[in-house]
Image (cartoon, rainbow, N blue to C red):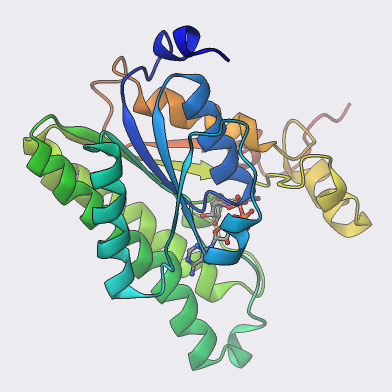
Length: 261
Ligand SMILES: NC(=O)c1ccc[n+]([C@@H]2O[C@H](COP(=O)([O-])OP(=O)(O)OC[C@H]3O[C@@H](n4cnc5c(N)ncnc54)[C@H](O)[C@@H]3O)[C@@H](O)[C@H]2O)c1
């Protein structure tokens, strides 16, 4: 993509921060934002960030552990200084995975998921919102919840509780930040194959669940989530705040039976 086409994109001239930028959805969001003309700071843990090559050479990498309260404000201040302001913030960074049956859920695992996935989202969004409010031009905050913000699944109490919290945090931020022109919305992915080649869903039990429980009978791909982030970030979506876009192939629309018959 040349400089001219980048300027002509739907996010031309915008400055964005994406957390979890070394992960599947975060990385696809960085790439989509760059294609649409934004300047982007990619945030993640040090090692995965260092190992990630973005298509554009001008993506700015800044390490930030979402479990480290002090580091979040410092990293955000650093990012905003490098970008010269902040228009868009995407909170995609999170720990995934199960923690075993509720009876066996440890204090340690509970604390880690709440600290990183919920408190880390709160602190990073607050730091971003403060920068946007100080800039006086409004902004867009996009949280990444999950289908698990609304529906549980076995052995995932800590993860789903944190994601449920992200859903209400999104609404609370939308209400409080409206007067600053900051619009806040959540993306709620269903199963998304972040390997990009379906290998994450080749395990027979998981593949069967996706076939039976997703109306489109396949996992989503990261770029199919990033496309919603671009939509929520662009100027045209100026009357959408406090909303959720589910990107789940119809999983939340049915009980079972996708693509059958
Ligand atoms: N892939 C899915 O099926 C799916 C479904 C629903 C929701 N989500 C959500 O989408 C978001 C992105 O997930 P993904 O699928 O791209 O997963 P991913 O594991 O590829 O990416 C998550 C990123 O978060 C980073 N991260 C983890 N702990 C961190 C910490 N303490 N500090 C900073 N960064 C940290 C990881 O390093 C990783 O790069 C997450 O919020 C996840 O909960 C994903």
